[in-house]
Image (cartoon, rainbow, N blue to C red):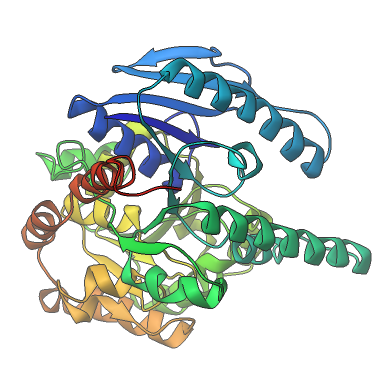
Length: 402
């Protein structure tokens, strides 16, 4: 089978769950012997325009200067030229286009090939949440509102143009028609996965923790999140500040970057326990399994738009229990393992209580062995790879037409 993946970013070149999904699905299809080409961005300009990586040919279009709108137009023109070139090069071979994110919707406006759209989240809603972290004048707010409406419109066009839409959770399957209450093509659920060879319990955990500066008595809560208002990290800091006086060996570390970083730093500085709360910034991909193994628990206090949760299954695969809010798709992952891992969304009281329970009665929560076994047995990338193959078979078999 022949696939052309179109994605604004690609792991590990660009950080983000959507770009990891794009990379894992493509790699899985290539391992099954299919022909894969990927058209993607080159935001820092440091990558070659063309590269072969593990049997997959990458074609990169350059970043563009100017405003967001100017960049969007220019990058779509460049991506469209690559799409036409690669489809022409395929000749008579049938090609399925796999689209990740609606940003490149104009680049696919006239493609003579079926499209499988992998929906990672509502573009406009995510933008609105992120902008809450930025001080804005009234004119800036009006421009942001206009931008969000345009994002929604572009995403709706991308979804309607596809022959099939993939979502990573039942939650997004339910919500998609609320965000886009127009007629859409069929929607299929194909959950994300975890590489259990990379993310697994590591030997000599005490020595590993020591390398991160932890003692055997320390209790580390870890949050691997983009620093964005929708992640609920401000509530997590407030809850930890309540717990800290009763648990002198508890620590809270937050990783990642994002628009809310300045406000979170201010919030941490205002607590009397700032020395026990750390913002680690960007963590290199190679260090994630070690850090997840070092943690006693990870916390996912998301407020909304949690479409799957790769960090959740990666933590579990390392044997680390995950305490998660009931927002989005998180309950789909955690409830079958143990409902005790879940807490009410948007509640400092609930966050404090689940943290208190974990520190005082850890036996109430699943063991590290049980977490790792659960993730290993339940989550792989097979469903997304199967979904790509099934879409190719259906829409390029001659039984379906555009």
